Length: 166
Image 1: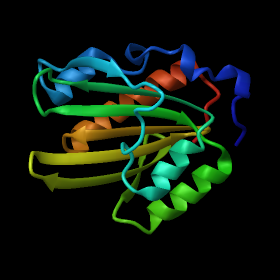
Image 2 (image 1 turned 180 degrees about the horizontal axis):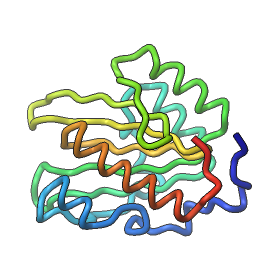
Image 3 (image 1 turned 30 degrees about the horizontal axis):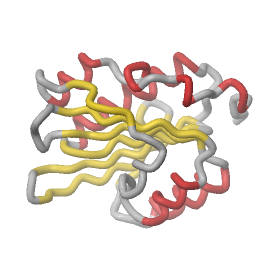
């Protein structure tokens, strides 16, 4: 597996709307779902499920984060795409393999999913990998809806960067 040249990937040049079709967000989250905001540099803390994922995010060489949801409600999900060094990915996937996350594939991309209930309803985190990129979709929603959203993000990234690995 060869990784795309580092110069090929420029996450900072992307807009959140380059990562996810609004129609996919609405069909999986609700007709009123929309793009809410892009995360600023200091707003990534606390998004990832667990300390190993938090550490991996701090080790990312590039990242973009986007909040989608229904305005003036508790319903929202975050999409984060990060370029990870191989050592960070290896540490993260090893930890995920022995955690409460369930491993699977989304297309050809290794993925890990964790669905749980909290006071507001079902919350799901999906981590998927298209080397050297790590895609996270986390927030309100079921495994089914978050997986479809993750699939769309992966499809957009593969269209932008055709040499992405798994």
